[in-house]
Image 1 (tube, rainbow, N blue to C red):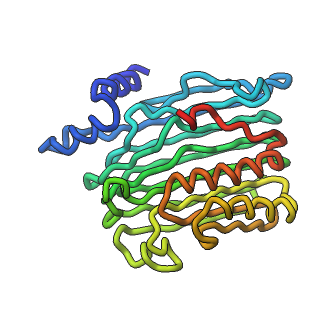
Image 2: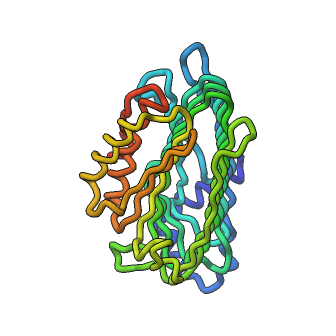
Image 3: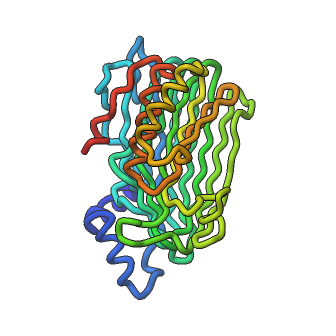
Amino acid sequence: MSDACNLVDECASLGGDAKRADDFAQVSDFQIWQPWQARLSLGFADDTGTTRLIERTHFGPLRVQKPLYPEGEKICHAIVVHPPGGVVGGDALALTARVDVDAHALITTPGAAKWYKANGRVSRQDIRLDIAVGAKLEWLPQETIFFDAAEVQLSQTIALGKDASYIGCDILCFGRTASGESFQSGKIRQNTTIRREGKLLWWEQGTLAGGSAAMQSPVGLAGKTVYATLIAVGKSPSAALLNTLCDAVGLLVAHPGEFGISNVKSVLVARYLGDSSETARRVMLCVWQYLRPEYMGCAAVVPRIWNT
């Protein structure tokens, strides 16, 4: 663990993501910057009605400090912390989470993830989630911001056992629009695979190049800058619930075309496409609040970290 501690100490000495970005931009010899490789492996298990964090193995600047129980002992909350705050070219993050039989875990992050301008290297994030028989997992990180000229590869693999339930959400922001920056160059590659008992339920992949026609195409981003997706797998909700959900979301979006939802067999997919990360957060939160009782069997209690 000494290498991991040294990396975190180095990050702390740089003063977080903003300082790291400034220093990175000023150095003349990029070779002095070695990519940060960070890995985190989490394991959750049911202990007579209490979900416990039984594994917490890390290397590099990626970790969970302690398990939290804001909803009681049945649901274990884990906040994944990436001390640098931002990812530069060549950095690689890998997170593996295993939820054992009948356990219930919720994993989130304390703030937005930032992917900085590439330095000739591709940055990576690989997520592997294994959900055992009857287990439940909610993967709910806060938004991801891609700086102009970022080169990023994102991969998610979800494996579910029989009767397992999953809700996962991603909010992707292209460019720092509040600073007048658009995503004019760079490339984002993303793929998601979901299987139940080895059988493929959902697979999608895509590549978006900054400044390309896909950024403006009606079959791409249609000129929008924020794209959010929530995927839920488990018990299919009723048509009445989905109609009520769509009515509630309709009060949050400026135009009906900004939101869509589909339910194919056991996979429900809700999407938002617009220009506001705040609206995306409200929409995805609304969807989660309606779906969580159906998929997870409990009321939607908003994690306190989302309000800080």
